Image (spheres, one colour):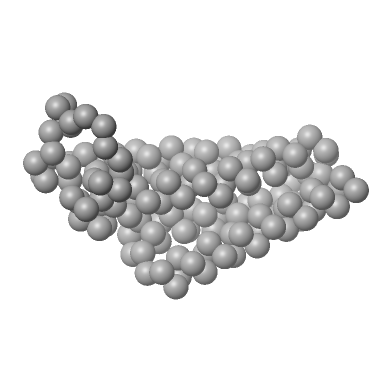
Length: 141
């Protein structure tokens, strides 16, 4: 496996943007169907909207939020690995594993959302991230 450690990060950024579009494409019609006029609405938060749309619609919003949480650590870690020149096969594999598991997590949460599987995917991706962080630490000391 060859390539830049930054490529998986770019793929995850693109995936996050695709989730944003998926969220909007499902949420906006659901809000309209619920009688919410966005042109006259002021303020508000996603949690307030969640109770007014079907759960399957809210799940996509929840996942988009998740993609803006822990993956920020992933982005920082792969940038550090790239800067210090630790673009090893192991790190590249862990980075792709993280991205693949996060995409699987997104799809599962957006469509099925049973918690045991979702948590398992999250946990596995977290182990990939932990491995990347430990490898960055090892490369620096």
